[in-house]
Length: 120
Image 1 (cartoon, helix red, strand yellow):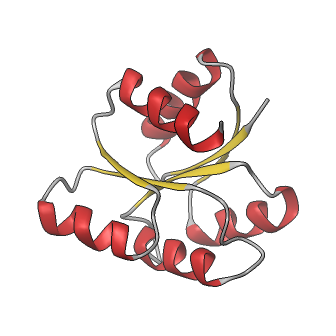
Image 2: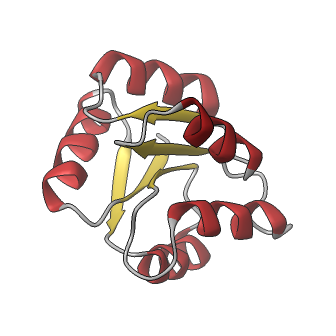
């Protein structure tokens, strides 16, 4: 069973995303900041990450770029998940190394399908 790290500073979003993934058979861990996420990634090496863009301190874009630039974490798929739905936001997210970009509010089927594709 794949373990997914859900990173979002909004507790309701963490809960919705985590429960959606759990119902699909994934295990989840959560973090509410880039700093907390970084610690959990190093300790637990998740199979994939769902990462919000707007976080306190360092943005999801910055964390994504850092993880993709590190040989120890570069292979972990990252789904950026944000209310930012503009074409430039998607472009910039993919440019940072994200495997996929989905918008909030999430559509459960899209999140599950994307995750199954990335961790298959």
